Length: 93
Image (tube, rainbow, N blue to C red):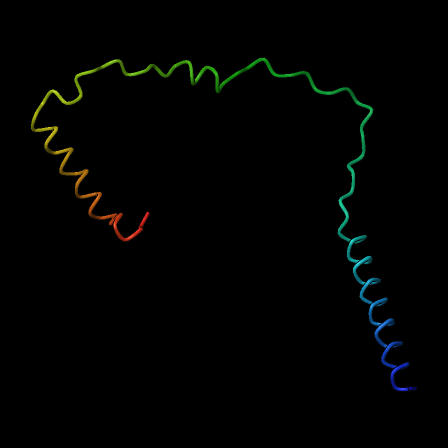
């Protein structure tokens, strides 16, 4: 009977120790909130470099991509070689 009491006491002490270690770890790794400044926010910038860059891109309006039969044959051969290289029947790529 005395041995069972020791095992239960050891189990409770071990469980409490694990809880204490978990709590200590949670406190040490908690996210801290950065201090709030009383200074006003900086004014937004008026430049929009990404919008200017995107506006400079014009869509390609050509429709005669495959007008040359030799080009079409070459592109189809490249496509076939790429399909063979990837081997989709084996589940690659």
